[in-house]
Amino acid sequence: MTLLSVAAVSISIGGKSICRDLDFELNQGQRWGVLGGNGVGKTTLLKYLAGLLPLAQGELQIHGKPLSAWKRKALAREVGVLFQDSQDTFPTTVMETALSGRHPYLPFWSFEGETEIAIASQALVDVAMADMEDRQIDTLSGGERRRLAIATLIVQNPRIWLLDEPTNHLDLHHQISLLELIIDKVTAAQGALLMVLHDVNLVSRFCTHAMLMVDAQTIICGPIHDVVTRQNLELLYRHPIRHIQGNGIRYFFPE
Amino acid sequence: MQGRTLLILCGLCLLSLVSILFALSIGSMEIGLQQVLGALFSEQQLLESKVVLELRLPRVIAGFMVGGMLALAGCLMQVLLRNPLAEPYVLGVSGGASVFALLVMMAGLTGFWINIGAFTGALISILLVFGLTRIGQSWNPMRVLLTGVVVAAGWSALISFLLAVSPATQIYSMLFWLMGDLGYARFSGFSLVVLLIGLGASLFMARSLNLLTYGDQQAAALGVPVNQLRYGIYFLASLLTATAVMQAGSIGFIGLIIPHLIRIVLGSDHRLLIPASVLTGGCLLVIADSLARTIIAPQQLPVGVLTAIIGVPVFLALFQMIAIKQKP
Image 1 (cartoon, chains in turn green, purple):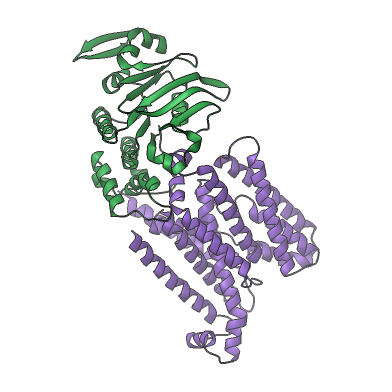
Image 2: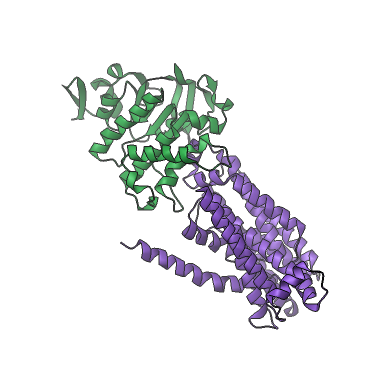
């Protein structure tokens, strides 16, 4: 089942072209990894896919319905985004932040009830932050903030999960355990996942498909084994790559 | 969470009532609590009743509403501009109001005409800033803030110019107006409607305002229509400020300090922050105005001076307490 599709989409921002005539489908059960050099437009593309920026050319459909036909709040029940950084201006607690993920499910005037608190508590347990519910978020470390942002997304529980460098600030153990956790949640929601990553080996370990953004004209999409190859990666990063095989997984390293 | 909110708000309502009764009883003529209550709830026609009902009550109620409007506008501006330093006057609303109010005074008009002038000036400033920030690109907080601050600086230069060319006999009343004064403030139905609409609409968007503090993108991703919300906040906050300035001139400090005070004590959830700020802002202004009337009686001080004299130490003390509590 197709959850998200784009047809003939061209995006340019600040005079720089990011993609031209991109066609792409995100189907249920798929996990896409987006790879590309710095400044190629991965984050921008992600924001367009999330419907946060208005498309000038082409069409984006979510569940077969064009983006413009969606109400913001209904859309937030279908599409969730993990941004690269989190901002905060005023003091707020870990629990309040996690609860914000329930916003799309509640009427405007309503308070969060026991159900919402139970969902948020469980998500904080999932990311191993159960004992930090009352902490102010400006006292958290970078990795803890990242885990809180992931918990908030778990609370939001969308079907389409768009993640921008989810492993930023995370230590080696949390990189693996949180990606496994996210994949469990996506599977449970019968959803799909698309994430921007810089680590080719995480992509080949966790993703079913990959999108290689070489430049605006050349965006290579397809199943992971066809797309993530030494030749393609060398083209993508303009750097010689070496690859080794182990446990049925291919690992890539820069020369 | 809901229970706590209600409990705190009931407490603040009680506090508001106490501060209003206090304000009604003190003044150049000492009137005891019993007589105040008598004046409010019985038919006796004593001199005390006349003073309470005709002189003090309209001013106290107007003061309470102005305090509430300023505190609410402060909350909204801080979220809108995502800047803890934002306050109701930061985008030039009061500057525009002041320039036009001074022009009216220079023309020799008084009373009601000054209010009309102030309100007109505020509206002109609101539309000017809105128009300037709409040209070209999308509405981002930094651009709005800078445009507003520059417009405010322009107004303030005009104010200095008007003061410099005004005759000495008028300067005193002009300065009094500029510092904020409730001397001519009377209960007005218009203010009540603006305050109630402002409060109702802000409470309706309270959870969206919470999300906006996490940034535009995050708020949008969680289902908040960010642009519409921004325009709504801007016009609501501006209207509240314009109405407050029209009634009482530029009373400083309440709009900056009350929202922070409430955040420190009660947290950042706008569902509590907004009504609590309105009530606390009302209380502070009513108490400050009572003192302004009495401290060096029979002479009166501009209430704007008193709000700062009370507000600054309370705020700094609280800030220090927080810092000490958080020390490892």
